[in-house]
Image 1 (cartoon, rainbow, N blue to C red):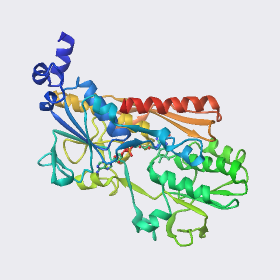
Image 2 (image 1 turned 180 degrees about the vertical axis):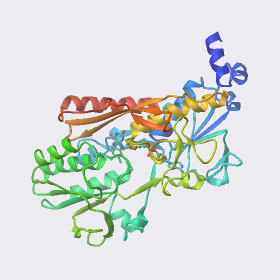
Image 3 (image 1 turned 90 degrees about the vertical axis):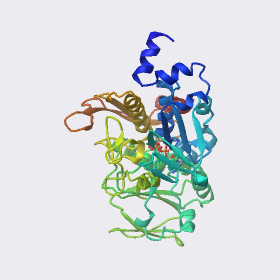
Image 4 (image 1 turned 180 degrees about the horizontal axis):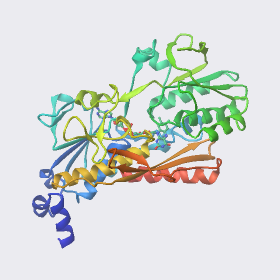
Length: 425
Ligand SMILES: Cc1cc2nc3c(=O)[nH]c(=O)nc-3n(C[C@H](O)[C@H](O)[C@H](O)COP(=O)(O)OP(=O)(O)OC[C@H]3O[C@@H](n4cnc5c(N)ncnc54)[C@H](O)[C@@H]3O)c2cc1C
């Protein structure tokens, strides 16, 4: 062992077992500190991978994920547009298991923060020294009258978690008559992926323009205005998709008559659609509620932004869409990946008895597909603000595309390939 490596392992409190387990067999590594990660999406897969990498494989890491494969939400609107298949966005967890991370395909049902365990099926408890929750979002169907039943949810789709619903929504679009109306309801912010619904409107319009040119896309936005890349989206709707897309602000959804596909609103008139896509209001995934880490508006988890540790329950870290975001921080996959790296470093420091990095800097780039190739982006840099104890955007750091372009389309596909391998390879 080189001096450098010995010092590093000492710093993370790992010398004892690392020296003993120089052979690096998976079973031998198990006596290191135990980290359990719940959720193998953008936040969870990244934190598992980087804890393993930066600890030189000395931690005992278990990733609990309910789905057998990872299906990316970024790029999933292209499946609705028809230019990509779901298989193009699907990655297995083999890359992580090959690195010695235990991946358990199971549903985490309960957390006992006193005993330090996570309960999975068959009453099995998985012990942890540190727990990371990155469960994404759950939907608040109780805020949309008529949408409470499984039958209603199977007919009026969200397709806001990529997978079977994405395919089902594509099938509804394919089955729709030419001259029909696709209506998309957007909840009030904050919700997962601010530009995502506007990108979806473009993708459906792009499909209609070629396959069903008499059809319409109605955007029924619960917000007062377009909340992301406004100028770029408006230009696309008014020019590329003129006569197809109509944008309506202040459409706060209150209920749905599922039988007639009619959406009802706080103040506006009812809207009847041929295909109705309701993105419901959201909150942190259920396991976060069960673990007692939801602390903001009964919806989101507040964290210490230096470590992403819950402000309420020690030794539980929360990442990604589930957190109460800092100002101007989007709920995005890119951001979840960045949260994960700050948290991984802080957890390793904590095992070594060290404080976290006092000044983390993270960034976000978000691409939106206007057509199958032409893309726009927005990006931002976020720096920890010691006074306010939150992340603040670095003045002058953000950027926005001047116009959609195919070059940006290439960058967007490269972004996706890069981040999937950063998490899972
Ligand atoms: C249509 C669309 C387009 C998007 N486009 C972009 C984009 O271009 N760029 C971008 O950066 N972001 C984009 N996003 C947002 C991005 O998908 C999310 O911000 C990101 O997935 C958040 O990561 P996460 O780890 O918080 O949650 P997720 O990635 O959703 O991961 C959560 C995981 O936890 C698992 N899970 C939950 N509870 C449990 C449990 N109890 N036990 C076991 N497993 C559990 C789930 O199965 C899931 O795999 C888009 C989203 C949508 C819907």
